[in-house]
Length: 269
Image (cartoon, rainbow, N blue to C red; front, side, top):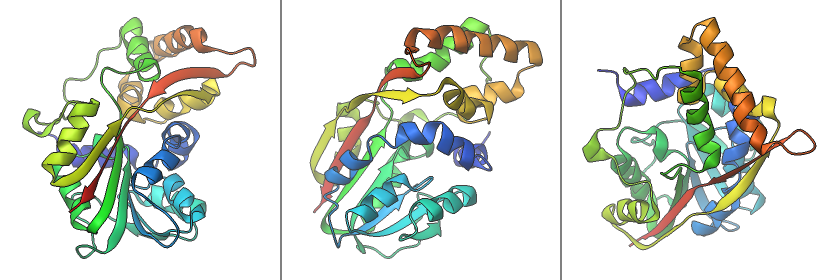
């Protein structure tokens, strides 16, 4: 059986630059709302768990927060050091953080719970390092998927590219509904109070080649399919991406892709 966490970490290795160009710009959108939900202001001690390229850490530094940013991938950390030079950057992965209990005023995890084998254990670890009265805020992608996320699945189906059967899946008992109620329930089960959940929506504006750069570098499930597919299947997949994305193409050639996220937060104690 393939280890879920090990598989996830392997998929990000060496892909930080491609992530920044493609999915990183998408994931940056909820940063300010995430920091608001965690009550991040000047002087607050913040942990940015799964910082990626450091976008949220940089936004928190701009508010005057004292920021520690952690990520499992060395390439992401190198990008984060450039993006958020005022943060203390460390290599670490949920569900084990190298910090004592109760040392942070707030913790954020931007699209991180999507990539862990045990979301409840990861959330419990985030809660552990927050002082009483501090807040945690997280984002995940919703299900059913909005149009932006559906685009990839539609392209794969139209191209007739089979989805691998050997991909690791979350154990059913560890999964949770990717809805406002499901995320709120996960937060409440972790012992958080004043739990809130919302669904921010936006339109992601991107160059078609930038958006394609993520899967072309092996990021996400469609990226894994791209890596494994023979030349003919790759050609079909690219053709279907071009055909389907044309519906979102603007006069200047860019794409305007409607999307959404789930944003949840809660207080310790």
